Image 1 (cartoon, helix red, strand yellow):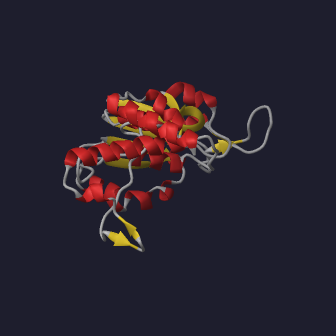
Image 2 (image 1 turned 120 degrees about the horizontal axis):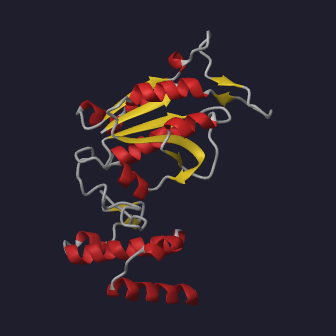
Length: 246
């Protein structure tokens, strides 16, 4: 997958891309990430990328011209993917959306700044606006990194095991079950015996039950979209009855 990030602060993204799993994925050629500085595309003498908003109001608005030229230069005629603008008014990013984007050959991520970008840039060269949550950041760079990280780990070979990306919070629609490693006991807290039993069927059931329990306690709205089998329904009935009694 090829990912192009348009920003006026490329230095904000480099440290994350030069560390840990993303660095290994880039070095291995599993993903390509190109940081494109919008400023050189400005036709203004001092390479400005923003100006005061028409109609008045606080802050500055990013100019359409450098953004449009930068996007058109980055995509050309052979671009096969989506052009996304990181914006608080966009569709909320989710694991499902990460899975959708991971199937594209290319992605272009536009990072806004200040009070946003001229609407004409969005109308001309952007396919969709995307938000990483209901809060406002100073720019789109952190949002771009979130999307890159979430999407990259779904690319085959990026993680050590392909099962790692499938058996985590939200991939199944549930929050992830508790995890443990050595030592067997730490400060009086022991690893649940079932995880040491070697009975894979019972371990799988324990993990499923814990995932259902955690999701019920912390994100109950997620359960509305989960397909439950008979064992799931029996467990959930007993869990709810226990909670009502306590």
